[in-house]
Amino acid sequence: MQNFEYCVPTRIVFGKGQIARLAALLSDDAKILMTSGGSSIHKNGVYEQVMAALEGKKVTEFSGIEPNPKYETCMKAVEIVRNEGIDFLLSVGGGSTLDGTKFIAAAAKYEGDDPWDILAKGAEVREMLPIGCVMTLPATGSEMNGWSVVSRISTTEKLSFWSQHSFPQFSILDPEVTKSLPPRQVSNGIVDTFVHVVEQYITYPVNTPVQDRQAEGVLLTLVEEGPKVFAHPDDYDVRANLFWAATTALNGWLAQGVVQDWAIHGIGHEITAFTGTDHAKTLALVLPALWKHQRKEKQEKLLQYARRVWNIQGDDANAVIDEAIAKTVAFFESVGISASRKAYGVTEEVCRQIESVFLNRGVRLGERGNLGGHEVYEILQLTAE
Ligand code: NZQ
Ligand code: ZN
Image: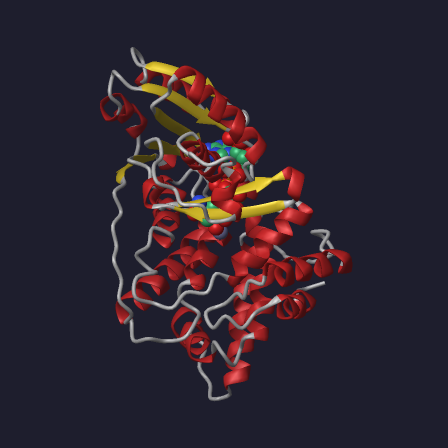
């Protein structure tokens, strides 16, 4: 096991009716900017619950943070924060709203010329405004981590930053509010969660049985609970299990002491930047191709995954790995995501553009740092047509 240091300062408030806890979690003196996305919170009763809990507090509203939050939109909120002396941000919505809010919190306190440098140049984040969150979509784990992913329209970029200051002070997770999610977002959430786990698990072994079995536990939970949510969309327990799976998949528990990959996400973010494809769909497209390309490098963990998650036995390593990949693709399809390059607009031109991005950045992806622009292009060629 590798060395690690782990600190998650987020209070999780989980369960039915817990949005009302906002009243006690927020100070009466705070000048709050409540951020939200499009119209979902106005249609499912979340807005009314939040407003009832915020009665008597000083609240300004900022809505319109879009899926794959845009730098340009976030900077409008930064202006409000500065003009109105806002000192607390409350994100109400999905991962995009929270990621945008994290960037707003960092940008408002940034002392350099352009806050985009936080994402583009890894500029140091010394301070951020405090954040609270009502998460309405199980997928990203952003409610209990320090990551934020933001896109910039003018440069066709989708980039991320991590900061210890970026963890929400609290996150309220009420599984009831996820019942209004359209099936497309439920599917996206299950696949995103699944891929978060494997990015921290399908690498190479460094003797971490606790983390491995926790990862396998989340994967098996998704395989069991995922299909149920479509058959029984009003089942509270299924919604609760999927929510907690999403949070625990990316709150750091699975990452400590292990070797991590994140190449599937690295390539997926570029596909979204060039084509606008939903985040989870890009992951479903890239995962099988990347595992085929890296089958030797990842062999030990792929075999462990095949055996423990899919109960595949056999002596022919290649055949076992092929079957595990096929079962994974079939699982994605069973929860509503069939991945196809053509359907997502990943043309030959886009593949070449993504190759150039990685060649120009000089970034090498994967747990062994062995995936540069040319290898990324080869992986894109292996994706399902
Ligand atoms: O915008 P509104 O109207 O709120 O509607 C949203 C949006 O259209 C809707 N929605 C959210 N909660 C709902 C709901 N509709 C009905 N009922 C509810 N309860 O769902 C749509 C998608 O929302 P979005 O926030 O974009 O989805 P998600 O939470 O999947 O976030 C995706 C973003 O997170 C990034 C992705 O790259 C993408 O930009 N990621 C962030 C990570 C992190 N911070 O740790 C890690 C991930 O790997 C990922 O990269
Ligand atoms: Zn993801």
